[in-house]
Length: 332
Image (cartoon, rainbow, N blue to C red; front, side):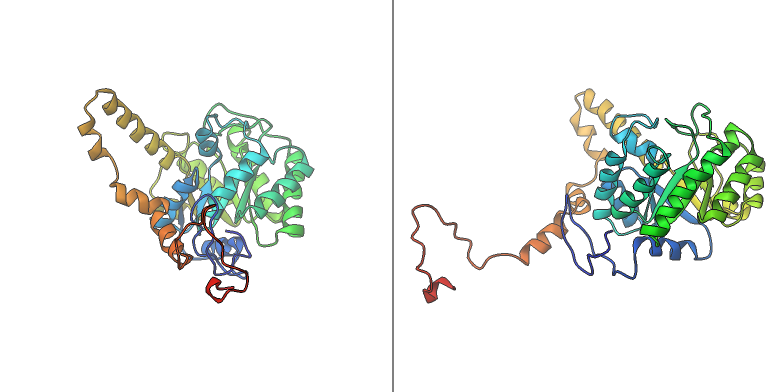
């Protein structure tokens, strides 16, 4: 959602829905949502369509997953997407949806000065929040092979750059500070880093891949402020009911691959049926075509198109004689 589209509707690679006013920036919207009582469930998106489905289902916020975004570009989550590819991907998501979007910015795409440019660029592309992590580069999904983290001092400088950029250019932005130290070093080291990140100005702490409920409880007890849990089905961290996560102390329950994994499974099943040649068995697996048109924005587009219909649809050709300038019948 770009500040400056005040109460209007525009189009860019799809229907842009109602925009918020300048006072209700994406970051401020996110901060207000997190200030509400209770845990926030946050399905993660991988493109504009999945983000739209999340919004239509009634969720308040989404996260543009690095794993899922890389996957739809045909890559594993190993730092192969560039800053510009992520920025452009984010812009498509924010242009076509209204709920706040947190963007996974990996390690910031370089040194601290790269991190500052990353924060500025992703904020300009509509991010409500941006996550920066302390893995060594190239990073990878924290639920795959264990990846190392940078030194404590280097992690602090990376986060300082992100927060300095936020304070200088994007004061409404929510910084999500991620550490992978729980798995790479120890839970105590993760707690230490998370609390230092918070003292520096990060508002949400995310310790990835704790491997037991006991570790999750230690993290929530030891970290000040809002914490996020990564609920990756069949990953390292136990999957708990949201009420149990709230009891432990979590503020956000992120579901990074629920939509991507379910979509892949559904596509594989449809392809398996199609491969049999019995096309009659494919139709029951599909959305109604009318519903699909509405979801992707045809209905909104046609409604707005009517606002700009010309009074005459007569198309001029080279054989038509144009009315003289100033002729009353010309409408000039």
